[in-house]
Amino acid sequence: MTLKSRFLQPQLKFLEISRFRLVVGIILGILYAFVFYSFLYVSREAFRVLSVNEHHDMLVLSDAEVSFYNLFFAYIAVILGQSMCFGFWFDKPARFKEQYYRRRLSIVNDQRVLNWFFLDWFAKVAVAFAIMFVVNLRGGQFVFSFYPEYRYIFAGIIIVLFMQTWITLRWTYLRKSWKWLVLSIAIVSTFSLGLSKINLVDYQALNHHFLQKNIQYNYTLNLSKSDSYDRLGSRTLLENIYVVTAKNSHLHADPIIVMDNQELTINGLGKKIEALQLLYEEHSRKMITYQLHIHREIEMGFINQLKKELERNGVFRIAYAVVPTNHEFDQRYYTDYVVWQPLFRTITDQNLSADHLKSLDAETTMIEIKQLVLDCCLVNDSLVENERLGEVLVNLIPNNKDYLIKLYINEQAEFSSYLDVITIYQKAINQKRDIISISQFSKKFDDLTTVEEKKTIYKKYPNRLFELISGVDERALPQY
Image 1 (cartoon, rainbow, N blue to C red):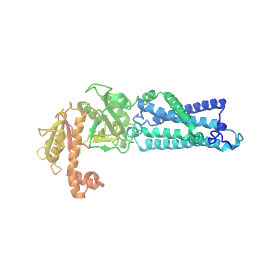
Image 2: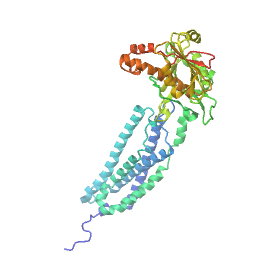
Image 3: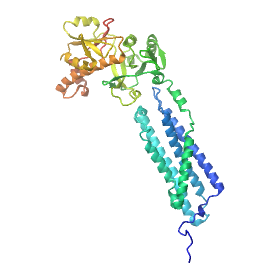
Image 4: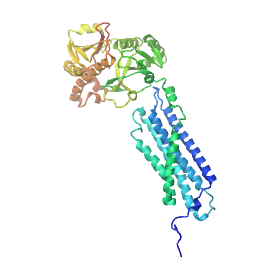
């Protein structure tokens, strides 16, 4: 018997698709792709809205990131739309040429399983990432981003998902499938590129709406750097005060005080605090911490006026917002990094007035630090650069508590320079404390766990740094 040509190739007439079914399938696939792309796009924008925090910060995507994620969403939507199209084309009643039913059923099941399994996996990953991002990563948008470091992951998802739609079709059509596969790649890519250009939500207007109350979005605020800082604990009794300058302002521009999204004068700030304290019980007022977010270039003359107004209105605790010296992330991530400074209006053994300073000059080791505009100080009338200030202080502070350090603040110096001196002093005194702490308790001062141990070290090296404004209008403010 003569063998017919191409007798080994499968007969595929049962897979032929009518023109009506072809057109309807394409329409359904396009509609599905658009709807699913819309869902993914709106979900992303909803997630960004949910990322808004108490500082009016939110997850802001650059134009490049928006375009990349739009393209990824478009590819996913179009591939799943194509899968739905395939399923519609090959899903026919079981009685139609029954001997080929299993082949058609395999193609249809592959498309359906792909859709539901991918949607299930994608939803789980998205929820897990959202929980990790919102709950575990405070300020996570400043720490982690998929784009551009992990672009290959998204490319891999698209490739695997696309090829998955063709597994059974490739096995059915064999070599004939190549031309259809290439054509499918071209159609999916073209349609995805076009779909990704559709922005269903004006993301820039959304950014502006939620960031219009954000300080760093509306003003210039560059925090000072410090390698000696603490972390805020409870935020229940915390009020934020911002000392900033106008956006894109020149050097040493006029300072602006902002509190509760209101621009205030120094006198207005005092009235604001006075009204705010009425909202708290009397015993809680002394526990309120006022976190000062001060632009590093603000002159100390203004900061001294601000502190005097805070003290006049009964403020006891302030904390300067800082960022680590070698910080890795955006400064908005370090919202709870501070340098503490309590304010006291009453005179105690730990808080000596200027009159007491004069009476102690003869019997107490006095260390005078006169801050200069440049990054250097006069220490007992000797010029010392800030880089060497810590070493000098360690050598000058005696091994007993009979010492006083008078810091003369230069009102023309920038706030960052003043904070450098404060943190250098704190490191120097802690270095002295570490020596005696290790000798007595075999661990550093910061590692001490009991109040009694810390009190023992405090008695040896108490905080005795006093601030004086250019030798005039003296006032004593114990640090930390």
